[in-house]
Amino acid sequence: MPLTGRTKKEVVSDFRRAEILEAARKVFGKKGFNETTMDEIAEAAGLAKGTLYLYFSSKQDVYLKTLQFGQAELLEQVKTNMKTAESLRAKIRSLIETRVKYAEENRDFYKIYLTEFSSVIHPASINKDFRNLDLSKAQALERAMREGMERNEIRQLDVEAAAFMIHDMARSLIARRLLGWSKTAVEEDIDFLCDFIWMGIGR
Image (cartoon, rainbow, N blue to C red; front, side, top):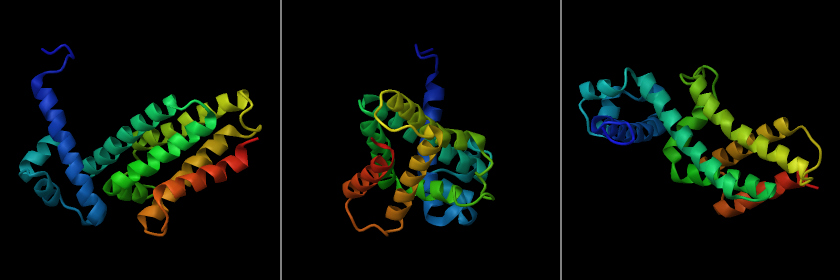
């Protein structure tokens, strides 16, 4: 057995599962949950439909795992990039920049991600794992803001509320760009939002 404690079969299985999720999010992003079929997911992944069921029990299972996979990947990038930023202002920019650029590079994922947050009756709306991953990004910002307030980088405020509002503003910017409502370069949009936020919380 490898030093990692995982067998070759497990490694291959995880790699194949990731390939399926990558293919699935393209289909879901294009057609939405209701119009997508397991046959289409299997075809996009280059699998027989029966083989697909060896990895996932249902279309909803594929959908939820697709969302979780993308969220986990994004969360890891957010935490890594925020950790290297020194000031609170730099951490806020890092969070926004990471999320916006990830959305630009993974539009298929963000289409279904935004769909999930637009409806309380959507298939993933009751999935706690997915929502907890999203919550973790806001909580990472909240911790950074508490530290920044202690260092007198920002004025005294309700840090939890501010962190969630900033988190939602970043989501709003992403939606605006995905809808084609923004005609400016991505860096300009990021600069504008970061400056707008800092005018509200900075000293």
